[in-house]
Image (cartoon, rainbow, N blue to C red; front, side, top):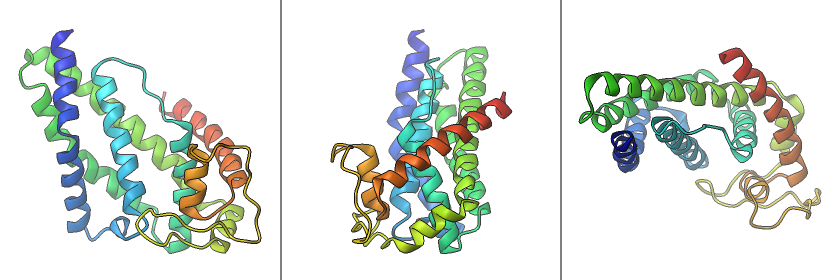
Length: 215
């Protein structure tokens, strides 16, 4: 058990290096996901996948947060508006895996070969599930015409992931605390929090469908 936890700690210690390698891989592929206004959220999702891989190494339960789900569908709708092909998300997942796999192998290098192989298989499966759930939920945003229209009316973020003003003709839902995830997402994308909540409900439903299909 101690070896498992030390492997997870070693892997977590490489998170910054994995993200740097991921960004370099996207740059070499001339990915539009590195453009201003996108990279902060792309990086946040990659970091979430890496945290889930570490949890998998510890044999801890892995779940995608509600905030991640709503962000994913909104990101998909925004990318559709911006003309970013859905295949870019698939390519980004492959690039992230190429950056992650060497770090996983280094993390388990000190373990007996059978244990190391078991952990690598576990981590790879967690990565696959995490990435596929995110791609599946994000893809739903591409097909949501109402959500795309809402985002089209909103003022886009002024900087890389920075705050954007909520459109003046829409009233912000004040029932969420200002520091909450719904508020942050709404502020970043310049949409009302009520839209974030409705998107979350749809994303939760689709994520459940994706997990059932994965099983």
